[in-house]
Length: 270
Length: 315
Image 1 (cartoon, one colour):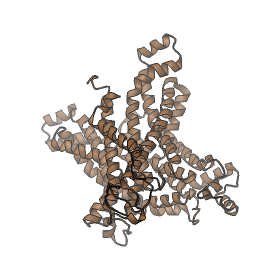
Image 2 (spheres, helix red, strand yellow; image 1 turned 60 degrees about the vertical axis):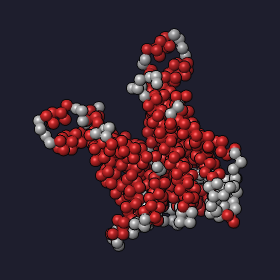
Image 3 (cartoon, helix red, strand yellow; image 1 turned 135 degrees about the horizontal axis):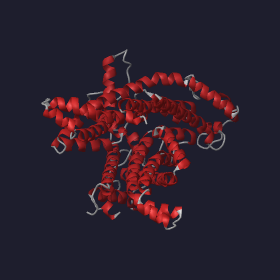
Image 4 (spheres, chains in turn green, cyan; image 1 turned 45 degrees about the horizontal axis):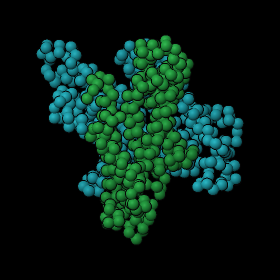
């Protein structure tokens, strides 16, 4: 874990996390407070990045949007990981019917394009984070299941697993104490990968107005809203675009770093 | 032959499961579906309206009967009628689908034209300057969400430079030049991300093929370098590229939603977004069924191509 953050991408990610979670605690302007008289106002001491079409503070909105992007994507990935890994590990260890069934179910989920599934859910349950998080979680379950399943398959035949079983360890003990610690690497890589995809999907849905609901700030929604006012105030559009690109770039770089760290072909150490 | 038949049956089964799940999705929702679809912002809907909607969607009939009616309709190509204006969902899909497919086809061709040559060049000199630059560009391209990329392209080419229109649509029959002009930006937006993927796969696949014996043999017997790369190496390296490309195309059918919205391209997405906003259930499920069917079909096609070219798959 320490190694993971001791890299350029790790440091940048830590910085972004700090901005997103410490930022809202600082005495910034209220991200929802409107001030119509100061529409499109430029930077000032109280509003360092200026104000948007309703006179809301841009910097404060960016910070809160960043936080909600990370919370929604991270939360969804977490739920998804817990469900997906449980199914994958059980399927890979117990085999038989449970394996066939869970793999078929995953195939079915993969038949639905994620964006469209989210739109169906928004139609049925109404848009908003309470619909968004479960849908994102559901969409990414198969990826965790497949990785967990494949990893368990390679580990389960190893001698140390047989040895633990021969010593009389119970199945839960073998799964949690023997197998899980040995497959944590690829699962961790998959987790970071899913967070990136969730961020992209969430911003896209919010752009369409189906993710985070106004007036709560979200990067995708801010981009969608500022498109029509670009000629008047280009920075309103460029700032959230830039924030989103940087967030995804850093997360992607972190993914690559993790993958190299956990790649079995790479010599350990360093 | 048995393998192909089994694979086709498997796909049809998948399609049936998808259709059934989409049909059932409205019944998974707790409470009365008709009331749910009509309720706006927590206000109780008009009982008369609820009764009418129940009648219209057939929700007052037994579940089995609804299901049979629904599946039979889809088999005939009837996806139901819109709740908002009572128009046929199938007719609307048929009108819009070609535009979405045109956009995807243009983007697909463009991405192959960029991605494959870039991948080949980069594999020939994996540590060269071009290779590093291309890898960096591909990584960046994949990190920019499509709707952000589209928005930035509109700003650059439509608003700042003024070279191309910001968005819209003109039928090809009315003004071919204008039609193609409007196609450039949305197609390029999709193609940039897609070409990054094509580039990576081509490069990796070429790097696998180039050190093989038959390439050395071809060189040794005096085949010109160009010919070795294109006729010998690339031909053998192209299979994974085609596979990944085809699978990506299936996903694109959904991904274009965002791009079409950015550029006001009147494909499936406009219908879908309007459907979701109006909570027009038949429209949303209709589009979902069509797109999933395409996706399953593409997967089947890839598998069959694979089965023909590589008999080991047909175990």
